Figure 1 (spheres, rainbow, N blue to C red):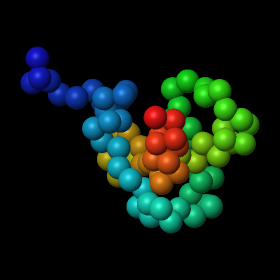
Figure 2 (cartoon, rainbow, N blue to C red):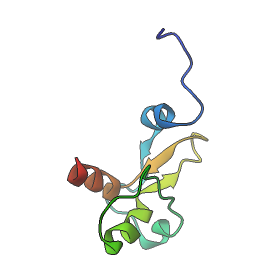
Figure 3 (cartoon, rainbow, N blue to C red):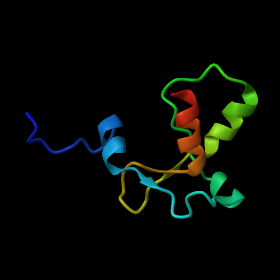
Length: 81
């Protein structure tokens, strides 16, 4: 039934309500320090890649749910898929 409210959290919420970071493509180092890792399963990649993936998603306080995604998150997605 398609006439349901979307869930308040989870994958469907993240797909529906995630937004690009405000300074998408020009993220500063200060923003990467408060980023939240959002990978569902650990990737079998090098430690250097895992450390940099911590800056892919930021909490979305504007909406109160989901996340902001960074330019690095999109690049990571395209490389993996």
